[in-house]
Length: 379
Image 1 (cartoon, rainbow, N blue to C red):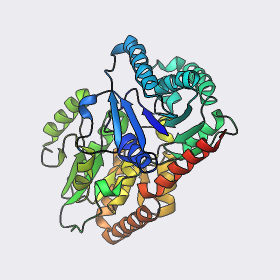
Image 2: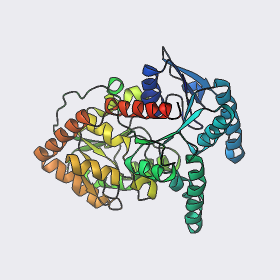
Image 3: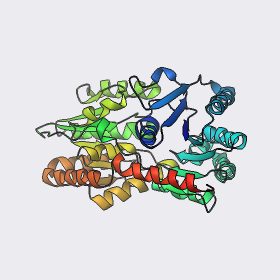
Image 4: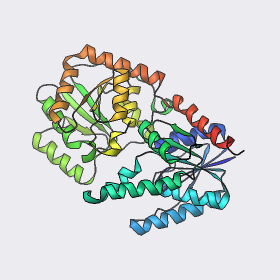
């Protein structure tokens, strides 16, 4: 049995594709391949996964070149199952199925109809969204299985696939043997806030930094960006930090390898999420939430995010606020600092929920179960 994970845009060391899914599948299937661009980021050392890199094309025409190269690499692999991760790789996997009779699993990390439509002018986004949905549904009906990275995405996929096609939710929860368990930490005079991952305007950069500025006028705090800020967002951030003299308050670690993220998060006290409203963000259950919970950190995040709200409400592990208001973020952070025992209780709730529900060890059986259903169908 040969399994091939196809990606048109993710690196071979992607946390979900490689560290979670590919490594897990290699425990069950002896022949697991990962085809993706950016071969310079191929994990080093012994790995049960085999890699086949290709050079990604650039620009609009480059997308077609990328798909052509991905198809040729995929057909050379001659896999029994193609597990794809983006709209482009879904198109390629459908062609591979037609050519080889292989099975196809679509693993949707995003609500792609929203991601694609947001690239167009606002007046035509509705038309783009409905058109994309209709095209995607045609390809989903060719799939033998589907995976959503959030509950909302899985509901969307279930509406598009055949009634006999299994759909499962495989959350982007952390791999403990890579991240490491929570270590004891002290909470002294300084409260360390953190944001995990890439921080941009549509992920709430401005609101988050303004909230931290407001809190820093009353308390000793630091915002640790475990990741980085790029391009015009970095220009804005550098200007904001300089203007308000926050160079000791807002700091960046720079982009870290997946296996170093955990040790950077572990000493922090409160995790921040600040996505701006949007259809894709509305159904998100972001991996940073589960990374915070792994280390017993309560979260402050936007109330409009259904996946985030589900976890926070069920586990009592955070506070939800208005994403457009830095003042509400500042008030929630202030409340957590002033009501420390209640905050520590939320942290304990987060850690318990992580141990019981929200680690990769809980998602791995779901992944295996989906593959068993896919392979059993038509056997």
